[in-house]
Length: 257
Ligand SMILES: [Fe+2]
Image (cartoon, rainbow, N blue to C red):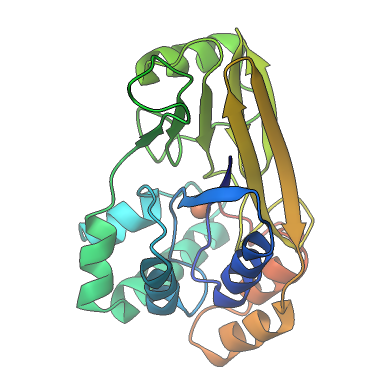
């Protein structure tokens, strides 16, 4: 059985719908999980949460979800210059203003991590641990260039051992590394990729005793519709350009989330 792991949807409804229909076409996907950051940057926060709830797709809290859900002072995002900071604040304020009480409650109730045991909890493993950023904080960025010591420290915090998988998102950059027999998988982003490819990204993961499969999938979606909706909203137009170019539009809109 394969798991479909979808992360960082960021209120991009056309991207989510395209990914879900791609997953539904696959007969070998047994379950779908989201890895958080359901809202922010695009104008469909309530619709995205509604689609996931209607489809019964469980998942973990991203930094955006837990900060909106708890009414925190900012989204926990990192930015590299004053313009990024300004855009980040606009997105966060817009999102807090537009989420329904029901959506906020739903975001606040998301768990921090989910453990999957494909062989069943009556056996020791293998284990798949789902978090948004890292097993310690959902705001911490786990990039591919982190040293092996960092990966092993995080695996230790998660209770992961050789043969297990730790899956997460948050950086919007997909990658897969194996350290100490543990598979570390960043799923990339459904609704706001940052690797220069505008298509929605997700992962198909298969974990069995002794074998692990990771497939990165990219799906075309109606990016023009998403861009149009952003421009029609009070969100900054820069967010539309960001979607079209997969995060490579300019140097001033690439704040992390
Ligand atoms: Fe994100």
